[in-house]
Image (cartoon, rainbow, N blue to C red; front, side, top):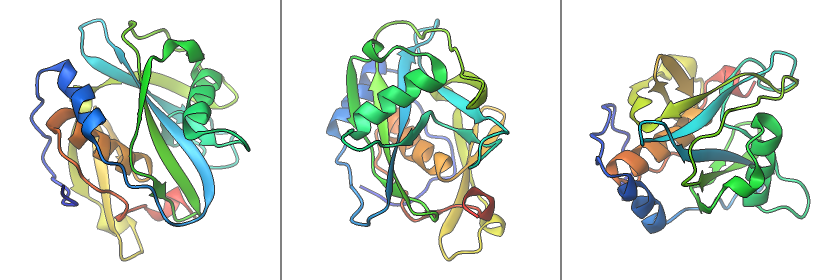
Length: 211
């Protein structure tokens, strides 16, 4: 296991089954810190070309928090809910992806944000073809699928962070995504594409992500 962040894009394994094998073997680290519990979904489904893909959203400009930022579908965990239940519910509410679509799930490391949220990333999987997205306009300004191969290189962005933590951004196709979403995608990228464990709790957020 390694906490080292590799800047280069890892070479893909070329085997879709390797993705789930890596997820099954992953030893997740929950946070020991308390905070407001939230869950996000990396909702994997086969694209038309047979590769895994997952939806990414652009948050509506009318939202009170993190308006206009790119994010995975997700939100606060309601009382009595598990991270899985919250991730499935939010994915259906935000994108219209039916809860019964998902056949398997895996949890990645918790991520404690500067604003005091403990985010649990839930990887949802289905063998059914990726469904058409139906974004809720009240929450989502845009939504689109990202293929695993579009999770690209990582670059240091220390100038955007006033903390002692490392700040990195991950390239997702033409986009540049910062923590916390960028940190979650970085861990998922290394695990799904290279079968490598990268711990990302100390990957810092730029000020605009939490201020």
